[in-house]
Length: 260
Image 1 (tube, rainbow, N blue to C red):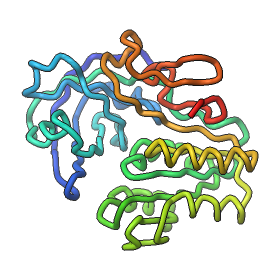
Image 2: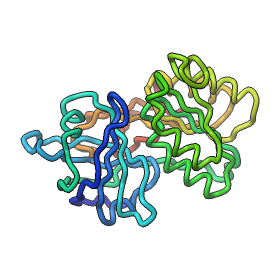
Image 3: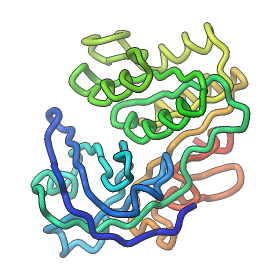
Image 4: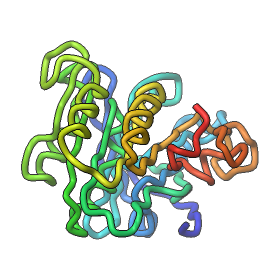
């Protein structure tokens, strides 16, 4: 894990993609270049200095020179709603990179990446990494509806074709849950690695399907966090090896070790 940096970045843009989804680009020297797929940053949101707790955000992608990180975020509470008011040119304090990210087993030749909702963002850098190393990568992506599939264009560009899609309302791809598509794919094709990020119930079901099929599976468990550096114990994950901290022991865990 890279040394955690405390950096000040500058917002390049902050734009709305759908009703609740926004994307923010931040220029921050060194941090992006050191960040590994699956790690996150801890942000002190401008204008919220009265709130001492930072907010954790996964990184969607990084510019080629590592100077700009892009974060996809969903408005779910006061902090993320306030983040939508941050404008280009404003300074933002970031700690990172934090946590243990994706680490595919040696010798992987065929990988299945499974994303639910905004969980598609933390998987993208890993998809880039796997494709660059010559791994055959398939992506299954699900969301409530077509408008929430905001990560699909980046994945389609990377893969050279559209991912397998599923929407709850049937507006695009398979009409139903992403877990239905996963069950079909592992029945049709042999994979030797699965990485999954999304709502916890979805990850639990995906893990049951893939582990029962004998496929090594890893999940990103992004719990609510306070300190982000392992001191406060607010982001505990129960595992067969005892209680682990999502922020520093994770957020990526071997699914076979997780006690759901």
